[in-house]
Image 1 (cartoon, rainbow over the protein chains, first blue to last red):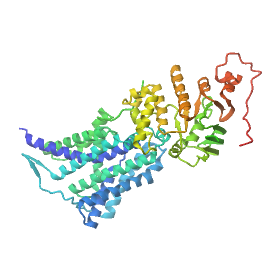
Image 2: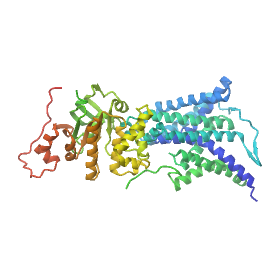
Image 3: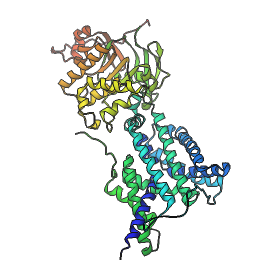
Image 4: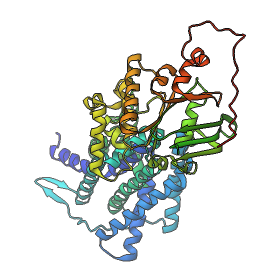
Length: 296
Length: 263
C-alpha cells in the first residue's frame, strides 16, 4: 500500500530543498545570461561564502542578520575580483577556455579554503530552531522551509531585476557584445555586476546549506545540483530555475524516500546526473531556454 | 570647425595587415557625408576606428589623429566615445534579437540618468518609426530586415548623438525599402541637425541624399567633393553608378592618392 502522507511530506520538503539548490542555479543563470559562459566555480564560490560566514560568526559573535549582509557584501566584491583578475583577460579567447578557467578556479578554491581554515566540518548556526514543524500529519523541516522561502524571494527579485533597465542592459550584453559597445553600454561593468550578483546568490546558498550540513569542502558539490536545475530550466531562464528547482527537489526527495529503501541508498546523487543527461538528450535548450533565433 | 576630423589615419589588423593607409575625412557640423567604396576597400574599418570598435577585432589605429569636436578620441573606449556624442550603427544591423524593440531602445540609454527623458526619447523614436511601435512587444530577431534597420537606427538615436555613423544601411534590403531608409536618414539630418557619416556601396542612393562624399579604394581616398560633382564625374559614373557608355580602355585614368600638404 502506498503511504500518501509520506509522499506528500517528501514532495513538500523536496520543493523547499529544490529551492535551496536553485540558489546555485540562479548564479549560473545570471552569469550565463550576461556573458554566455557557464561558471563551473559556482559551487566553490558558495563554499567560500560558507567559510566566510563561519569566520565572521566566530570572530564577531553578532547575530546572523548582521553577518549575512556583511558576507554578501564581501562575496559581491569577491565576484567582482574574479571577473577583473581572471575573466577580463579571457576576452577574445574561445569560450571553452573561459569555462576551463572557471573549472580550474573551482578545484583551486576547493583545495585552498579547507587548507586555510582546516578540513574539519565547521558548525554554522543561523539561529533557526531545530524542532520540526507539523502541519496536520505532515512533518516539515524548519531549516529547509526557511531556506526555501529565502531562495524563492531571491529568485523572484532576480526576475524583477531583469525587467529593469540594468537587467535589460545585461541581457543586451549577452545578446551581442559589439553592438552593446556601439550604443554606449559598458560591457565589462555589466559582466562584473553579474559576477557580483551570482556570488551573492552563492552566499545565500553557502550559508543556508552550511547551516544544514555544516561548512566543509563538500558544499562545493552543490554545483552538480545547481547545474541540473539550470540545464533543466534552460541556462538563460530564471523562470526556468524556479520551476526546474521544484522539479529536481521533488524528484530527489521522492527518490531518496521511496527508492532508497529498495536499493539500499545512494539514489540522491544519481537523480541530478540523470536529469542533466536526459535534458541534454531530449531537450537541449531546457524547459524555458531561448533557442537561437533564425529568421527565414 | 568641423565636427569630426580624421587626419591621415592608418589602421592595422593584428599589427600586420594595413587596412587603411592614410585617410583624411571631415564631417562638418550638421553635414551629411558619404563614404563610398567597394567590398574590402576599408570603409567599415574607418568607421570602427572612429567608434573605437577595432579592439575586439584586434585592429589598431597606428598613425594619425581623430578629432571629435576638437578632442582626440584615440585614448577613449567605445562607451566614452558614445557619451561624447557619436554613435555607430553596425553593418548587418545587429539588433538585440532576444529583446523586444522597446527593450532594444531602453538598452541604449545607459548614459541618461533621467527616467522621464528616457521614456520621452522612446516615444519620439516610435513616432519616427511607427512600424516599430506596432511590433514593440515581439522579439526583435523576428522583425523583417527593414524593420531591424529602423530599429538599429532608432537604437542609435537613443544615445542623443551629434554624429550618426551608418554602415551600409541598405544591405540586403529591397529597393523600395532602401528609398524609405534613406529618406528617414535625410529627415533625421534635416530636422534634428544630427551630422551623418554614411558608408555605402549603393552609390546611387547615397549620393542622392549626401551633401558631399569621399571615394575610398584599397584603404586610400581616391576622390572627394560635393555630391553633385561626384555624381557627374564620368569615372564615378562608370565604376559605381552603372555607366551606360562602353569603356574606352585607352582612356582609363588611374587615380593616385591625392597629396595633402596642409592640415
